[in-house]
Length: 361
Image (cartoon, rainbow, N blue to C red; front, side, top):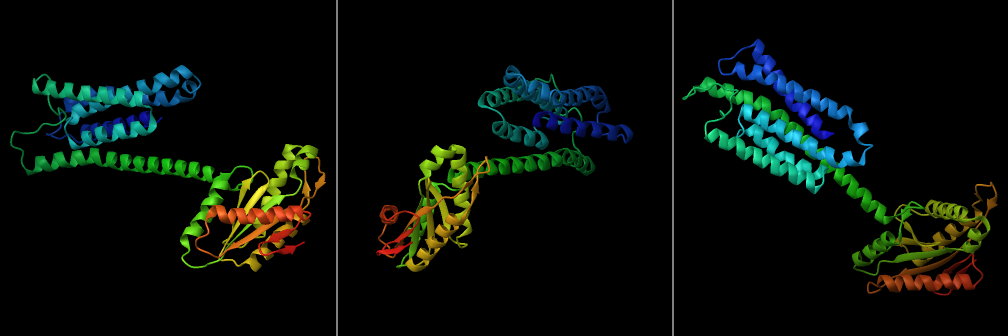
């Protein structure tokens, strides 16, 4: 509905200017033109208001969604060229609107609507120019300017044009800013969605891997980077016994328990299925094993109530690895943590296995 709103803004501005010169006549304003054009401007405003009022009705029709944008933008071009002709189609104020319109149209509408607007706009502009050259239409008929205007006439013309152009500048700059911010927020939302696990609302595998990769590439000395790979024990039986909705609830509650057990700089992400990966920057192996044990205890002590109010408890197995060498890459670190995770499973589950044959139960 931005097109009708712009039209209302444009025509209301011209109507107020006409009313001003009606009560305060100027020898440099052609009142015949203002009186003759006033009804058209009122029609433009009323039509724009009707367009806004019909919005909810038109939104329900698929056919209207294809036709209405073209009709609205063509009506906008006609209104623009009519008003541009009155003040001079080669003036600064007309140039602002002509330059800004295709840019806004490209952001709001599809290529068909945009191309139709540009073609009709250029055609109308060239036609008005040709009619000016042939003497059929006067240039800027709103103004009565002498052949050699004095300083007062020039100042008067400049003030009127500034009065018309400054609101457009403000409106289009504000509109452009809001549109850019809107698209940036959409892009940020899409980017966040691509890096977030929708079920647990934590980092997904790609995001947590990227974070670990960044820490690996960033270090230039043997700074310890510890990782913890955990897997919920017998998760398949939870799904089989209570259903997938309860399984999803278990994943969320386990994720919450892990997050509550971590420090400020630690990161956790859902690695896949019932597995989670915890990345601990600048953390030696002994501290990492303590954090893993804290997570294990928190999960074990958490009581989960499903939709039937049945209490469910789950446990998890943990594999811990600390990377000290700069040449160790992402696959090597993940594989080392995975080896410890499988040791924990083979040792009876619900325990922490740490690289270096340390076993915590």
